[in-house]
Length: 103
Image 1 (tube, helix red, strand yellow):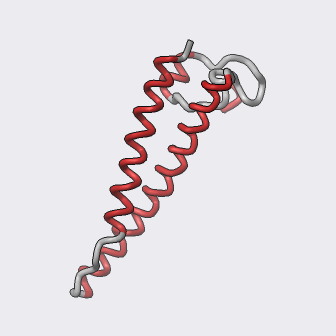
Image 2 (tube, rainbow, N blue to C red):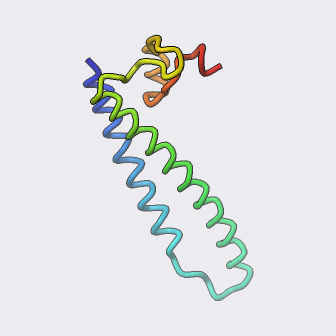
């Protein structure tokens, strides 16, 4: 029933894993010897760490959605038990709440 969603979520999972790997690689890069550049590098590292944390959270949500597809619980609101609209799942394929409960 949700084969297309499963495929989309698996593709998204690959993108997110790749993004995390790239950010991790960037975070492990050597620092410049120039102290002025080091300040900029540290600011960039803060941005990268935040991006990594957000991406890890999204990956967790994607993997949770994949498990819900496998268990037959996908597309049902975790709060009220009603179906989540197709439009909401199109916009946010790992949504766990219907629009009413999310408001």
